[in-house]
Structure formats: C-alpha cells, structure tokens
Image (cartoon, rainbow over all chains, first blue to last red; front, side, top):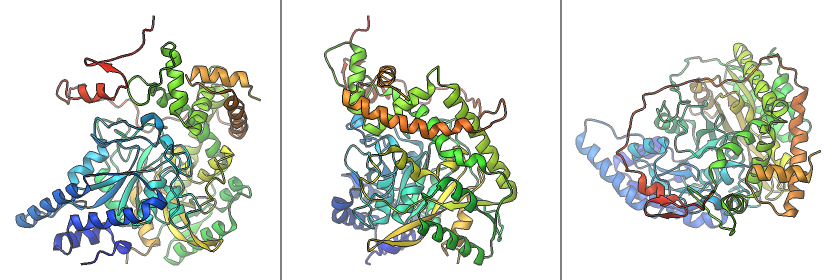
Length: 487
Length: 93
C-alpha cells in the first residue's frame, strides 16, 4: 500500500507493520526518498546513515518473529524511523554537536536513551543539525551550515534542535529526539508547526547527551501527535544509575476532566516589553479560548509573578557558567580537533579551542568565565542562583492555584535567516517564554496552535503548556484535548 | 564597561586564542549581554536564598559494569594523537 507519511503516527505505523500492509523496509525507504528530495534545500540532516535499510530489514525479521510467536505484541517502536540530534551518542557513529571541534568524533558508547531505543527496535535514519553545542535559537550556529524552515526556506527553523523539528515537519522522519536547555526542543517545534516536548528535568537520562548546561539539559521529543510524544517518552524515560539526577516520571493520567490553567497575559506583557508579535498574542488568546470551550477553567493567578521576568537574564548567567565548565574538556588532547601551533601545550590548547569553537560558543565560554571569576561571582552567579530559587518558589505557589501554566512558545513566528545574527541579546530573547521551565526543572510542551501569514507564507505558531515537576502526564492529557486527539 | 584587556584576560583563563579584531567585537557583544543580565542585580532576594537541585547526594555502589579494557581502544582512538595505546601530549615541564 502507499504510505501516507503526512498523516502517519507511531500507532498507525505499528498497525500497518504488524498487519503486513507495508514493511519496515518500505517505511524506511519512504522516508529516505523524502530526505533525498528535500534535504538539499532544508538541510535538516548532517548525515543519513548508510545502514538504514539493514536496520529496517532487521526490524522486519523481528516483526515476523513476533507474528509467529503470537504470545506477545511487538514493542511500539519496532521498525519506527527516527532522527537523532547530533549531540546524542550512538555507539560507533559520528556525533559532532555541529562543531568543527568534534567533526570526526566517533561515539564510543550509546546514550541511555539510544540504548532504550535500540532495544525497542527503532530505526535510526541519521543525525540532524543543531546550533553548535546546542547554543543558539536558529540553527544558524551550526558549523556545517544552517537548516531552513520547511514552511519558508528564507526563514530559520528555530533552534537549537532545528534539524529535529524541520525533519519531522517535512516528513523526513516520523519522530525525532532533541535536547532542551532553554527551549531548544519547544521553540523550533513552534517555528516548524510540530509538537516539542521537554520532560521534567531528569525525566530522561543525560548519559550520552553532550553536556551543555548540566542543571538544565534534558532530552526531549519532536513529533506530530501528542500520542507519539508519549510513546517515545515512555520508551526513553526512567531513572538511570549513570545519571544521578535522573528520576522516574509516572505517566498515569490525573483523571481530571476539568483543568485549571493560568492565563499569563500580565507576565507576557511584562517580559515581552513590545517584543511580542500582536499575532502571537492574538493566537494565544484564541488558544486559551479553545481550552475554555473544551471545559477547562482559565484563571489569572494571585501569586506575585515578579521573579519570573528575571528568568531569561538569570538563565544567561547560569547557563554560560555551566557551558564554560563543561566545554573545558575540549582541549585537543582526548578528542576532537587538535592544532599544533609549534609552541607549548598551553598555546596548543588556545589554538585548538580558538579554531574549533564557533563565535557563539566562544562568546558563551568567555561570559561564563566572567560570571564565575572571583571578583564577579557574588554579583552574577551567586545572585542568579538565588533568583533561580525564587523562580522555583514562584512556580510552587502558582501550582497551588492551577494545574497548568500557559504562554506562547515564542514571542514571534520564525524569523529570517541572518535577521538576529548581529545582536546576541535579540537572539536570546527568542527563548523568553521557554527558559522559565528549565529554570524551574518543570515539564513543558509546545503545541501547534495555528498559522499567521507573513509575506504570503503561512508560518506556524506555538502554544506552550507547563506542568508541575514530575507531572508530565498532565501535559499529555491537556495536549490531546487541545489538539483533538482524545476523541 | 568591560575592556579589551579584560577580554584578553578571560580568553587566557578560558584557553581560547582570539584575533585582535575579534577581541573588540566580542567586547561589544559581552558588554551588551552583561548589561542585559545585570538587571538581576535589582532583584531583592531573602538572605540565604539559593537554588538547590531536586536530587542531592545520590549514591550508588562503586561496581565495575564493563569488562576491563573493553573501551580502551575506542577511547584512545578518539585522541587526536596517540601512540602504542597511550595518549600523546607535549611535555609540560
């Protein structure tokens, strides 16, 4: 049968694969065909794996075995094609974090999430583009060239998981893994019109995810339905002895039919300060109305929200501090690029790091070094850490009043390539509504909420929901309702 | 305002070589970012307030989970310069 990629979900693919309507090989080939047609223009993939068909044939063998056994059902992801962000390790394959520094680095082991996907029988299509070391908001910081937005090739797909979002949006993968430190799964999903889910911090093991901001990083999913995000998360989640910050997130539904959802208009006006596109605001109001019509209650909270407006500046202290620490390991000795400038070891370190890191990466390392240096530590890092405590407390108070918090995912639809490259602070503002969830360790999801027409092109918009720490299931309940999946 | 000399100092601490042109443009960038993030100085926070992770001091048994030597080759191979199973660096003394 002809495979309808546009409307395919994991559940539908599972049924067809098990019924023998098409094979895992047919499915993989269908995606490879799309990649061949579109990747030249979109540049979502940095590498399409050469053994995709072999992986799919292996999956077909297992599907047949399950059929013969009849005692157990095949795992949900057996034969399902998936794209992996270029900062998640798959043993024996290249993984570069879209950096010259690691251009030829081969992963010596599997990330825990990958190990779980392998035992579920997923088919890895390839590694997808990102901002270098997951720093940026547009995928323009990739050392290997930007990814383009499938809805308008003159615009960015968002970032840092721009390759993941563009691949799923353009039917170049059924689902994808990304990583989210300040909005890197949700913001590109909003720009590309797909679903981006950031689990509670620790919900997925960070083992084998290249470290950026270790107290913020989490692996997330990009998909076209909430049900797919839920299936994917249920496979990769869980406590892992290799990551002491990992937790077991329960996915049992709250059973609540009517949810209380916070309308954050006052906060949005406060932090947006004129930077929020009126069409985004209009769409946000419509989205709240949609939830209200579905029987949920929209309320304005009484909690003092003033700490939340400092989430972004606080993030841009904490995160670079962690970046400068984490990226210290890249010095040309143990892995990656090495530049011998003829001098001593220290001058080789400098030469290597100067040549290997792109501009944004160097900027953040220097910034992190500054905020951690003895003279400025208290004023910046120390203060930011305290404000972070306040932000978490504020969310604790908010969630005494409501079940979920709603904001737009991003202040604007996808912007033009090059538009924000000259001014780093402008680029950082793209994360203004997403960083709060990372600062508070809470789960959040970006849901496609409609389109706005700009210069004759329809650009997607996103609606973000945040839930209390560990209560990711609430996001799936509300998300399914919002997108009409529960019917 | 941050100076070009301070940028050089940070680059030395962070072990990154920078061209002269870049020092000036990074100085401007970092100045702008510091101005933006500096707004947190206005926030009044109670004394002793500090962020702490949800999970702390997580312990596990210190057990060997892999066969001895099973990763040696792939880890050594990842080093840009290696010889006879050893990572090679310039002399440090």
